[in-house]
Length: 405
Length: 182
Image (cartoon, rainbow over all chains, first blue to last red; front, side, top):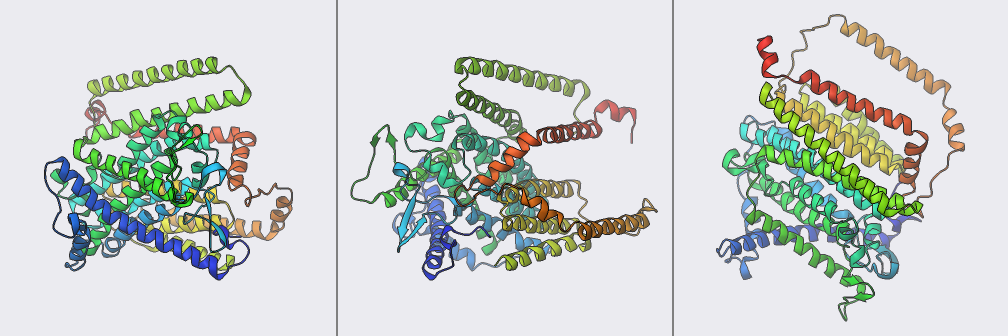
């Protein structure tokens, strides 16, 4: 049996088929619209922070600016450099565009998760979930997709047959592979508490604010995830891939017309998807804000639709945070980037994961919590000191023997 | 439906595998390898081994082949290699003998042991995926971390040893260059 949508379990009927098709279209259209509005929002917000006006001519508040830019790009000449590898050059934009949309499929976009409802809604007499796919591997799908997204950037840089794009893409691949480890470790902390891989299961487990994973995993995994996700998205301050002062435009220097537009679209789409994923994993996704028995309920609107509104509000906060990062933080140096990933985030994520695992073990077996915690802290301090000793030793060796890499 | 998906996935695997051999350019060969790995992941999904499929994509397609490509780009070996020059002259006849032997062993294994799969499958505890979508992953974790925990840990030690060995071999310092100048 092949894993299909739960609606198709008995036999394939017309109405469920139409529901699934509708979901596919909605996810695609919402993705495109969100990207378009995100580009406008980013330009407008950054303009505000820099005391400029930003786009204001096309449509009300310049909201149609992205559409106008898209149409302009569509009609521009499509150049393929002479020294490029034509097939890979044409393939690369799609390799970065398709994963950006695929990852959006597993985000629960709404539905009633309150009182153990599991987010199921009834459409035309069929019970379904307000998300395109709820695969058994759930969040791992997002991880797999984000590891595939490296190919688009990497091959774009290589196939251009030019120096700067190649440097950009080599940087990108090293950066994305390194930060994926930190991303996976902080994700593991969430999965440890949720006990399930499915995204709707993770959302259903976060009913009140104290059950939100950002609090119940103790904020550290969330910070690691946020930093690693920013690096994974190649957004400032980790945008060494397209550092315009040194690399002209980075991996997409040789691209023009619609191919360039696809890269641009994928980049912003990935930002939206990653924000939605952060909200799903750490901030309860479509769950309303609830403290104890008090639920901040929006009157009149049915609960299932309210989920969508809550998700939208939470995602907007993270989109604004990403714009804020871009407007305020200066770009890291390459060695700083690698040091942060390998020497801070990965050991930190691993240590925190062990701590959570030992706490869980202690609670299940009724061990003395204080004793377990103090032993964990001693072990973690010991590990930290060993790591620091290794760093000092390697720094000393580098000074006496000289670095050749 | 299952047959259709199997056909598509098998086609991906075979086309990718042939591509790895016949494409002259190392980058194209590596991309064909990605196609093969994806096909294998789809085959895992039809067998309901979702976790294996995800790990296949994350580890093989997402990390290992990316590192292959990274090395190809960084070392600049992305020019077409001249296949006429042969550093080890006995390599080709030996390769033919070994591959024929491997095919022989595989055919013999399939011919004699076709019933083994069904016999061994009979005692297996099949997870109930309809009620618990994580049943598969849980069963896999239980067998890795209880029954096969020693093999699992020894494999991870092996990987660490390999990494440390590579770093030691590839490490060059100013002193060592001064001792053996090129």
